[in-house]
Length: 237
Image (tube, rainbow, N blue to C red; front, top):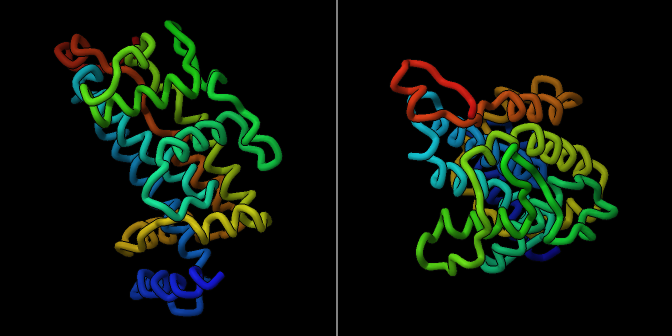
């Protein structure tokens, strides 16, 4: 694609000082960068939901950060070259998490349940509405939000781990996903995500996706109550 031919040198430039010019092709560098951004978001959620921070205090910022990673995943799957249509990217990301399969993820309806806590099940539409509330607050219609609780994020590390691992594995052989990644509007803004991923996860490229999946699945996003903080400990509700 002409657009990719223009974009590709920027990815080599972004990786300058991290790897040699011929170590990875530009599209692989873009995939590494996207992986790094997703992992950064996961670590940010992990920090926000640490035992020092009662979950009710930090839940909405944490959910917004988490949802940004899902939106990025959906953007790369959709090949969205525009800064708009982020709601569709977010829904696509959740659809992929539910069914990380290139053949039929697009058939997943918005009414599909993705996770469930001991209190409620949550559909794709519920999760998208919650992200909109977390990101925009009173600028949205509250009637679009169904009842929710602070246990949702604790259900996601294994789901996200499986989805990201499935995406990275499929990306290696799928022309559709590779072309979509090339089209997706992702700015090569800095080299730290590339450095972190290569340093931590690419000592053996054959185990790359499984190492990334393991890092995500080990995140502790469980509920931390204000009472447990006062008592000097943490615990899931």
